[in-house]
Image (cartoon, rainbow, N blue to C red; front, side, top):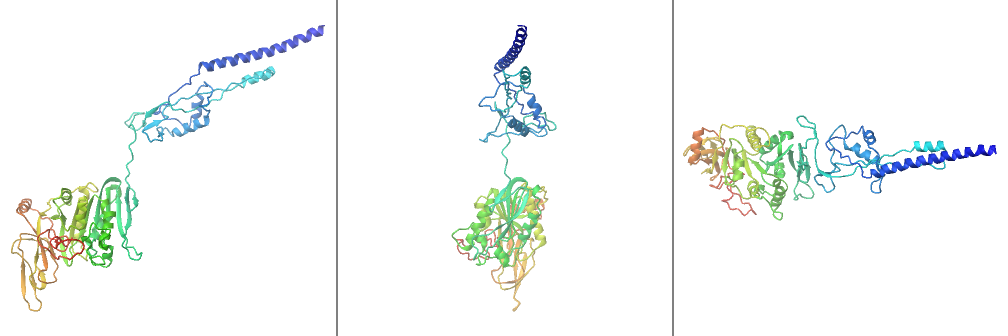
Length: 544
């Protein structure tokens, strides 16, 4: 009996203790469940997009989030992903990087988010001992996970901490679309602030032998207009080649606004043969803008015009006199075109000869295509004249400054004389020409310009000026025949004389663009140019 009484209390005590422990565990679990139900709504803490997140403190940010609700099927537990997003949000207190939506809208997705924490319940085994039950309850832990969810779509705000601005200042609603400064010429991309050498070749090569023409391109660091400079459209005119070279290689791309396309030797085939013409003896400057079904010269002109010239906003075509003639530095321009007149006024104190020129010249074709163009005439063929080249380079640099492309504008103390008429004075006998007048000289009616002497009979005739004006072009001393164009005179109108006398100017002289191109008075050295449809009267600016 005593043994029975002794055993029963011990069994009763163990069971009672187990029941008490299980009851305590149940009450604890019930309390946690009630707390979770009371906080069913997720705690939303908006992220200030103007306050950068720290990569070095992701663990601290996660630890600061209180557990609240268990994860649902549409909100998976993704603590590692959340840390990755936080780490990618910023580095060293830089502004939050915008995440642009797939539709390229100007709003920033996921600008604000909510942290939702989830806890998992721990259950204790009812069949464990008291020590086991206590350990199970003490080890019950919560695993927190953070999911970054979008709660709004906000306008893009950029944070800045630069001097003079408050942190968190909104600079703009959205970044401007970047402007591409690259140029695509001849199928090649020319990046800004760079210079490249390209090549152009027409489709008229013989037997697979290409005639590659070098094209020099300087693309500035800032966007702007495109100016094209062409030299040696006539292959024996060397001054223009040197002018283009000096101008192009004298440009620093970092200081250039816009683009310069330089073609030092346009007529590479004529240049290699030291000839004015193409190999088929055609004058290339009588076939623009060209024709894909025309002669070889016409097809060559079409390829050059469409691949080079049409990429430009303005054109300066550089020439010299032809066939033992020389020209004073001058511009040939159609002043009836407002844009051309504005371009011609931008070269400084250089003479301007008004005229449309040959309708199939490069200049005229460009103007018809809506591209302001002038011809710069300077010097003689088959020679490099340093002084003439210097004048031409100075005029082109003045143009670049006036167009706002490169360099600073200079003030000129002289005005540019403009000649609306010009004429060639011709020899009346055969013999050797001996000039007394000089290039650029001002002459009056009946002034002696030179003489022609027969070397056999010693007969001599005098050439006199029939006009008041200035010698803008002349033939070099040589053997001449009757009718030979010897002196090209820019004829001054009374208005031009008044301006010149009041300003006391000493502007430069002009000359025709091509072999006696006299702006429409007297035909000089007319050439029979097939396929152009031009009359002799139309082909008066023969030097161009």
